[in-house]
Length: 68
Image 1 (spheres, rainbow, N blue to C red):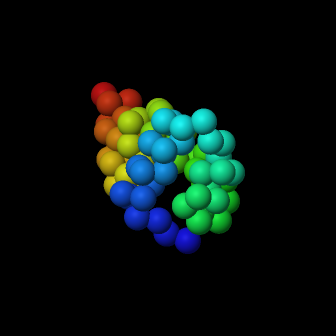
Image 2 (tube, rainbow, N blue to C red; image 1 turned 45 degrees about the vertical axis):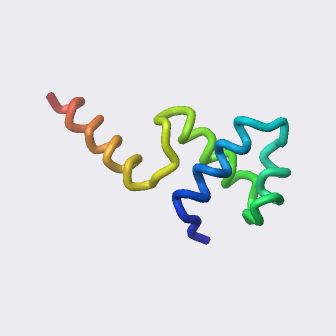
């Protein structure tokens, strides 16, 4: 299932700013799996966004720097 970028960010920020676990956050937002929430949180913590396009741009930039 596809989730919109605004929802992803809202979910991640709710997780970070609350005492709820991945499963409780997933239930709260009707997300099918707590693993989805965990993945979004890891991406957010590593590169500061849950936006898929920005993640792809980040990976491309990393590859270009590696080649140089």
